[in-house]
Length: 361
Ligand SMILES: Nc1ncnc2c1ncn2[C@@H]1O[C@H](COP(=O)(O)OP(=O)(O)O)[C@@H](O)[C@H]1O
Ligand SMILES: [Mg+2]
Image (cartoon, rainbow, N blue to C red; front, side, top):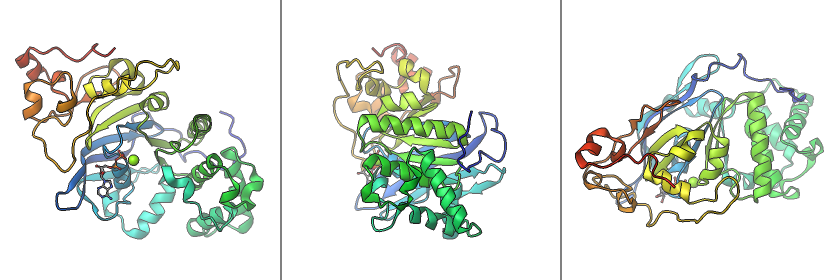
């Protein structure tokens, strides 16, 4: 890869093996306090490998943003983490227990190890301060040994890296288009060479062409700099294209976790199959948008069975009485897990129900 003269370096070590885990989430649980608490994240576990793009998909309201805030320890009342653990393994090999970091450690961690880009991020730039000054503030706070000239040259390099003219350091945010502001926010997120970048609907507010340009840019930078990405969006089609692996969320849980490439044709969970039927295919041919009838359940309720049962065309007896566990399907290229009784050999044989495999159209 021909790295342009960005002044940035890649990971300190050569890229580790693909199975090297950088972030491990175990049984994360988040509630919004209230008369009847909303259980927005209900026991989410996953591993993010170094250098990979993990996509998180799911309809609006299924807990994706709440999970992102939990991962970055940015939850604010009435949200409360009620369980789980978060471990980060740095490129130097140090294991960090994220739940035990104090405020000062968190501030440093958030810029230098893991950074975030949110949907509203392009409106989060300070309107009365130039772009250059905002980068300068980041460097002054986290790289106090950096001189003025170096701060400026790094800022110019970062802007060019995301396709913005270096002369824009003296611009104010309102002088830039929405797409340019979002690029600036991405450059800021990369300023201190984090190992993980979490992007929550980073391009949803932008038009399709600009969205595509920015995604290509992120992909190029990822290859060049070697960071991992957690990319969150309701747009499953987009995620299939850009992710290495994909987690599909429904009602606060991951209900399927699979290699992205294979998921498009072999989804095991009826909800994933429904989502796949709900968007135009990758060739741009608009198929019938059948969607999924009904709407997601009230997250204040505690249904005894599968949260998707009421909307599922395959639901059978066990689905209404017992919650399916996330089971490894033992497929090649895995782990490939799904939480559906149809994929559980015990229930399947009891009900005489066939597997969901090969059912999607
Ligand atoms: N500040 C809040 N107070 C109470 N409930 C909230 C709050 N923010 C989000 N929720 C609820 O948490 C659930 C998950 O929301 P969210 O994480 O934003 O989902 P997504 O990002 O997938 O659209 C939703 O049911 C939502 O209504
Ligand atoms: Mg969201």
